[in-house]
Length: 273
Ligand SMILES: [Zn+2]
Image (cartoon, rainbow, N blue to C red; front, top):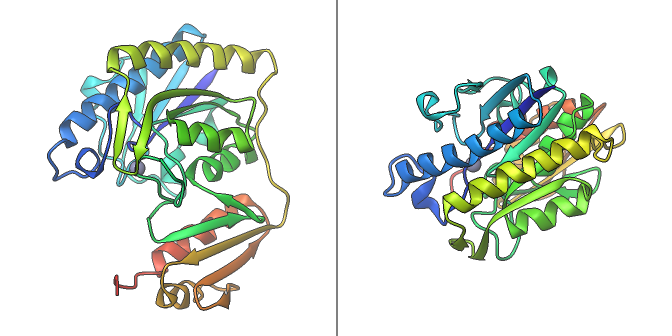
C-alpha cells in the first residue's frame, strides 16, 4: 500500500488566522511546527496500517512550508510546485490518499480561512459547488485513488460529508469565525489523527471507502468577484463568459477541467479595484 498525504495549512491544529499561514507573519514558524505535528501523526497511522511508501505533498502556497528534517524518517517529502496539480503531486503513483490541514470552500460560515484557491472566486464542477477538498478528491478519484481521511475544522468535515460520507474526518478544532478557533492541543490532535488514519485505512482495506467521481464531460463554472477577472479568464480557448462575473469551460474529463480552472486563475490578474 502506497499512500499520499496532501498537507495544506489552514486546517492544521491551532491555526486560527492569517498570522499562522503567511511566511512573513508573527505565528508562521509555529504554524510550520503544528503542520509537521499533524502530518507526522498521519504518517505514523499510515505506517501502522501497513503503508510501504508514504509521500507527503506540501500543498500550501508554493509548497515550501514543511521542513524535511522535522518529518518522520519513513516519509518522502514532495515540495515545490510539481505540475499540473501541485496540491496533490504524486496522486497517480499511490493506492490511497489522506488530506491533512484542509479547509472549507469560500463562503462557508464559521470556517477558519475558508477559500477556494484564492478568496476571489467561487467554483462549480458539473453544477456542484466545489472547494479544494472536493476538487482534489475528484482528481484522485479519476485515477481510482480514494481519499480516506480529511483533517481540519468542523466546517471541512461538514463539507466532506456532503460528497464522501464514507470517508473519515479528524476534527482538530472548532471554528468560532473566519479568524478564530478553539483548538485541541497538538498532543491530543496527534493521537486523534493517528487513530483516525488507522481506522480509515482499515475501512478502505475492507472495501468501505471508494474513490469519488463525477460524470463526463465536465463543466467548470467560475464566478469571480469583479468582471475584469472574468473577462481575462474568458481568454482561455473555448471558455464562455456567461454574465459579467461568470465564465464556463466544458472539458472532456476532470483533469482537463481542473487544468482549465487553474488556467483561468492564472489569467485573471485584475487588481482589487
Ligand atoms: Zn493553504
